[in-house]
Amino acid sequence: MEGLLFWSPAVVAVGAGIAVFRVDSMARATYALALSFVAVGLELLLLDLAYLGVVTVLMMVMEMAIMAVFMIMFMMNSAGLMPMSMVHNRRGALALSVGVFLSLAAVALLTPWPERRGTVPEDPTRSVGTGVMETKMLVMMGVGAVLFTTIVAALVLAASRSRYDVRGGRR
Amino acid sequence: MTLDLFLLLAAALFAVGLYGALSQQSVVMVMMGLELMINGVVVAAASFWYFVAPAQPDGQVLVLVVISAMTVEMAMGFAVVTLLFRAKDVDTTDTAAELKR
Image (cartoon, rainbow over all chains, first blue to last red; front, side, top):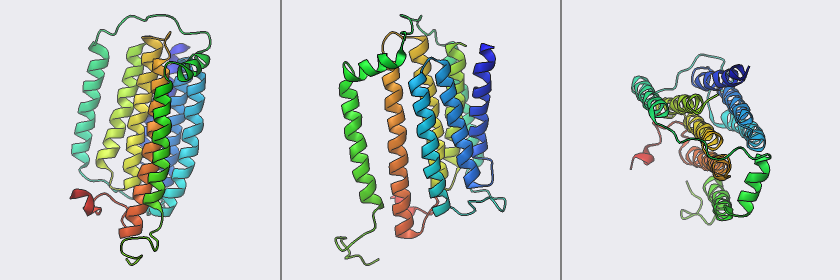
């Protein structure tokens, strides 16, 4: 039963990940990626990470909804009405990613990982909450600063050039 | 359910994402590949927490940081796509020639 609980989301996560680059429509690719993230969220739930699993699912579903809007804004063939292929150096990329998978798998299987120290706390969410507010507060303050910088930088990059542009708004 | 199995899943997600990031021409599809790679890192960090040091919150905090990194990647990626599209009507990596300089 435990094996089934692990394998079914795992197969869905990887299968949907592959589907992202195989389907014709950009919108379908976005939904395939969302499905992959939901499956990974389920895997996190299996590891007793109730909070992080739910956060992953909620965040990624929202993110993919936004991504679908961007797809329709920028991408050709977003509805997948005709077959399309927008790839370059497919063979090289395939060889490299298979090589990376094999070496990562070899590291995962051959490394003597340390024995488990301690047990899972009764409430892992409480544990991460206390960690964030105590020993790891600096990490989260750093993340907060980075997120704020991202908001400003993304707005500056994406906003339309105005009269304050160097070229006076002329293109 | 073992650490090895979770790490294999993480490696598979990372490799699929790497293939997408390297092979796709559309900038948004490249970002999808990057997201899949980070997805693999999330699985690996969470499984290390569970199977190696569950008593400490370090692994969980690492997952939080990685999820934040994913958000930052997404926001900055879309900002750059918007800028490229505004400036040159470009939405594929091959035509974004200024990135080569």
